[in-house]
Image 1 (cartoon, rainbow, N blue to C red):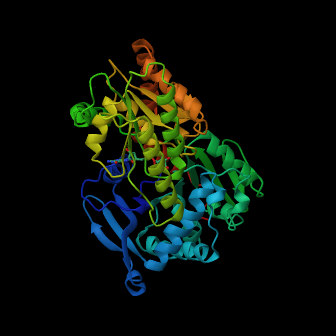
Image 2: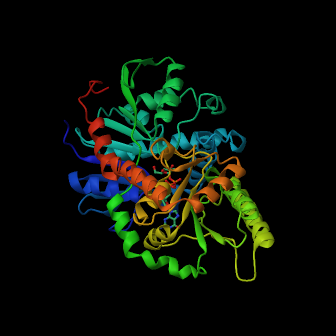
Image 3: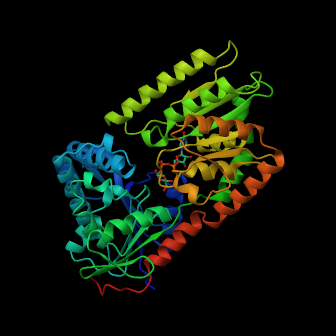
Length: 459
Ligand code: GDG
């Protein structure tokens, strides 16, 4: 097994000394344990001249962190354009939102070429490179073209698209060779693996046993590694901040239904709000007060589709609150801001129900965080979309079709009426599932698979 350094490449790089957030913490710990380098985008926008200056060191204890900058044109074409207006909608089955722009595609590949040069500048023989997400699909190919023979892994945090959607991608013919340049392509779910294998098979790849693939002179592997959370850490945070719910000043007996999502059209928020409105208008006992607290920090606000989803949501919130609200009760509380992680953990614990109803989602960590945050003696109920990657593991949740507001409305009613015994049973099963593939398991098992003996002989 190779014992070289670990080189992580991800779109954004944490700048603080002790970063927070599940994935970031896991990568931070893996890098602390074996030493290495983390390379990512600083978020700053600079002139073309400044961008050419290369990497900036942002920390060197106990591992190196380097950032690179983008020009305004690169930010538009690479990040807002190709990554978030082409790949993101396509990979989330929203070809209707797809923006196809050959200039964006060119800039995306150009940025990958530039980042490859920067990465190649720090890599030593024997180092293992782990590249994250759809921003860097061509990066391994670019690194191979520069002559790198290191082990290079990829993890796609979002779904692998269906073969029927992929023809909408003008660069689909390049995708097989982008993927084949990695040694290991990690995906979230078995469904993603099956989509990826279908795509590769249709593109002249030879499927060997157990997700191993032969394409031209390359051999590589495709496998699923469902990402998890720091279960123990989250449990503790929720216990310590259990009083966070008091800030809500709910009236006695008022039930709390929670939603926590980046404000993104893939998360099914309009359908969720409509379902909550339907639940309220049809609830068997009109005396029951349930409030939906939706936390939705904005993201990618410069992409048109994100402006639209925000307007749509604000209009549904206004309608439901206008129709259903009382002088002393606002049914939907919608917070379009980032709240501290500890407060979030405490709010989860107070939640009677959590609505995780994406139309498409690689995994969805909110579902796992909600489960971890519960008091096992009196746990809340998770309502989960069939289309979240987490649905493959969290079978003990109440499963819904997020496109059907009546289905979700019914599930809210069932959840709020569920007996303590059933809630405990379901919570026990869900805890078992999230413990089996926690974040430590995820980094360890991925890196172990990536470092299996070389098959490509340095190609
Ligand atoms: C991508 C994939 C995959 C949310 N609001 C606040 C806040 N959050 C935190 C949550 C959770 C994280 O953000 C969101 O993670 P998700 O997994 O739900 O979704 P994406 O951001 O779309 O992530 C996804 C993930 O990558 C990992 O592979 O699961 O499918 O799309 O941790 O708690 N955190 C704080 N304040 C907020 O207001 N502090």
